[in-house]
Image 1 (tube, rainbow, N blue to C red):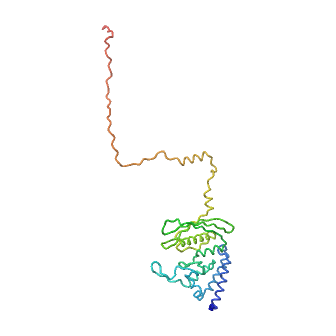
Image 2 (tube, helix red, strand yellow):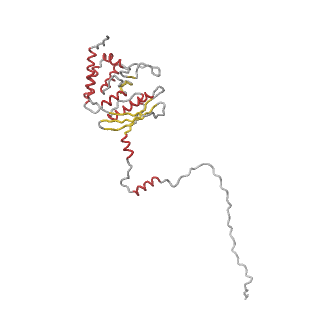
Length: 299
């Protein structure tokens, strides 16, 4: 029978210290408690003391780029240009683990990724964070509505219950795609964006987004606010009688009486010349002699 090799005493001591730090981190509310900053500083110091170079080399560095551990954007494989970036060093991975542990994420179960040297929660990570704050939710991911071959757009309706409040959000999750992207992969990325938007909406905390899904911002729509906006200003105006309101409406809709004609430079055909009648004066008519009239005597 094979025996499990025993860990060195230094590793066991670091493990106990790390577990204590994680319990302390889970007990503090960093998001809504300013006084917790002092406790968080103590927890960070305790975690760094536990994550010695020996512990990092023997425990956490082997977890990098594995399914049971955490992913990074430097996995030792060549990129599309044929270039291979070096793996992250111990100091970078240690900082990422500290950042994850202080908010309640573990370096196992793919709860966070290291992208560009910074820790970012994954879909599984936001599931843990939402459970930590006690949020209950249902996400309805609809069909892709984008016609762009480079991006997919998934409308996601989120119905949630948090601290006695029940509401719903609509998030348009935009994720980048290529010829190798499957529908399941795209929907998984859309689910992550929906959970991220919900966590940020409830807590006001943004842990950033540097993966391929960060090229476009989310659109978060509060359905209650939309309903209020649609039903607002639909009643009668206050302080105006009907006659004044009618005059204002008719004045706004009245079109100008004169519509200017478009000018053109095209030559117009000449109108035919009409003859002009010249007036000529006529002599006054003379009375005709009266032949039958009686003659007057000449004396």
